[in-house]
Length: 434
Image 1: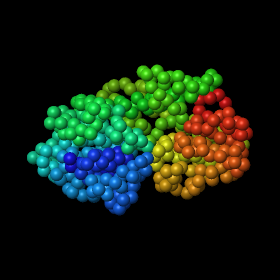
Image 2 (image 1 turned 60 degrees about the vertical axis):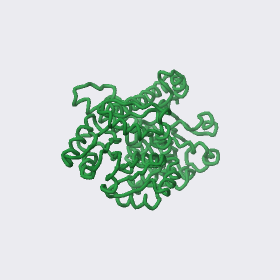
Image 3 (image 1 turned 135 degrees about the horizontal axis):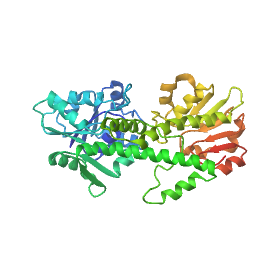
Image 4 (image 1 turned 120 degrees about the vertical axis):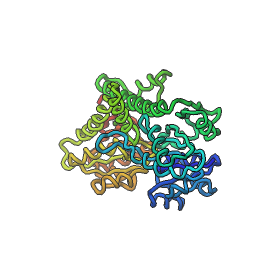
């Protein structure tokens, strides 16, 4: 099949690489000339575990190409996948649809044969109807259908999720469009469940899923607060909960709050959509507010550990919103760092992938360590803010000698509490009394 993908971000690029690996001819379209030039020269513009090797292979085989020309990408395509951003609108916080609608308007004139236009971006319910209207208005003779094809790729695991999805959901309002999507996903036949539903149901499934997972994270964080007061251990509690198949063990890791490009945006959008419809989403509203407060609470815990210390220096391990990605959008680590800076702390931070993206936001307000060991130099407290498991291999016994005060706020529960205390650290973690 010939596939056009509009957008080369954290969804579009892994999706393009994945479909190209099945032998499809994929063209990725993006307006960012610098990004396209980099991709054309074989340089990835984002970090995803395992992506680079497959990207170089399919691009080298000629199955994956890149262009800034909508015409070159769309003309003759069997499927056009919309994978552009839908960030929160700066004024209303609703999903900003300008990029989706602009892409629909721009691609419309180049639909010369029957084409399925698939919305893979996370979009409000009813977006498919609007995209359909825009294309018809700009190309009244176009033979096309619009479907909802939500993505369920986790950043850091996008390639793994593409090749082994829990399910493929498609919102198609007629059988002809559904058959094209079945052909697109033919390599997955018998390996995962294909669910075909109404287009508006498909659009809702994505928001409902992300909102539920965000609530699950907020719940385990609130339970961690209880454990700290009651003397229980959240890791043990989460393990016991997760063994119940009705609950499951995913998203039961207590921490500094959820972040990234999806959960904060999608919970807000879901709440606003519900408000417009006159539906009460009290759980989602409480999750949003609780998660905001969570990040400030975590920052204050770190500051409490340097109370009375003149010109405190804080070593930060991790800036990405989670391990396995270079994404710092809505990162709890970044928000915590911002609060620490407001309180006058000096910060030296390290991240395995996200330092450059963090620098684009924070500039020279903090120091950026070349190695994780460097953040221990002269530090009054070490704050673990991203769950890179590589941090667990650090030689703490040696590194503690570099610190001014031996203190650690492990907000990802990476280190062993008894070992840290044995090493003489004042040590706190999430969900244990201290």
